Image 1: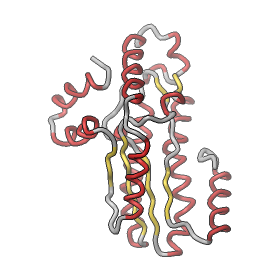
Image 2: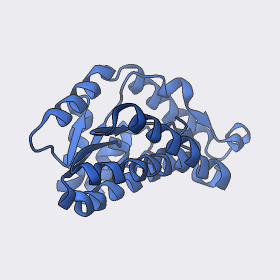
Image 3: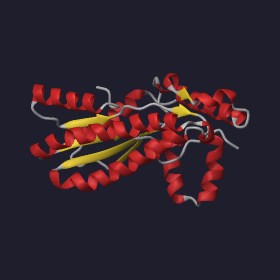
Image 4: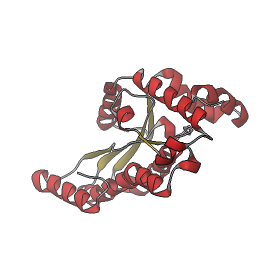
Amino acid sequence: MDVDSDESVRDGVAEVLTRHGRIDAVVASAGWGVAGAVEHTTIDEAKAQVETNFWGATRVVQGVLPAMRTQGGGRIVLISSIGGVVAIPFQAFYSASKFALEGLGEALAYEVAPFGIDVTLVEPGNIRTDFTANRKMAAASTGDDVYKGALDTAVGVMERDEANGAAPDVVAAAVHNILDARRPPRRVSVGKAGERIGILAKRLLPHRIFEAAAKGSLGVK
């Protein structure tokens, strides 16, 4: 189903319920990335990014909740990102969509716990998928002389790290473990240890020190 479409999500959920009579788990994983400076990303480009990554997940969650409440339980897994905890320069609207998903998941968990519904946010680092090939560049980036050097460097670092990222299997295994767990965790980080430590570092280090350490790994000076 197309998570950008209310009708498509309604039809998709209805079809599952018609065939199986219940929905025990949903994994909201649709997403893509737009790259470019904030200044040179149009509002329409930014809206399209958030439409899929945030509102798409919201549509799916809203679609399955009535059935899960009626049956007295369920599991919701939201595929967030380390980029939803540590912002990615020149992918600001991707990070914004994932930061929003983090807030949604945390608030949702409080609301649906009384109905036996568990919510987990999975925060992958760089994973070898088609995400790299499907990245879109903000249209104005092609004529950008102001940010071009920094943008090219940052996107180059992203592509290198994604190509050398963890296998998709590690995310699948994490989701499997969440769905099998008696008490699933609220958040699970997945990927290479050097990337995952960034989440802990941001929580523990003074902000100036964290930013200074993070800049090089994110491809900015």
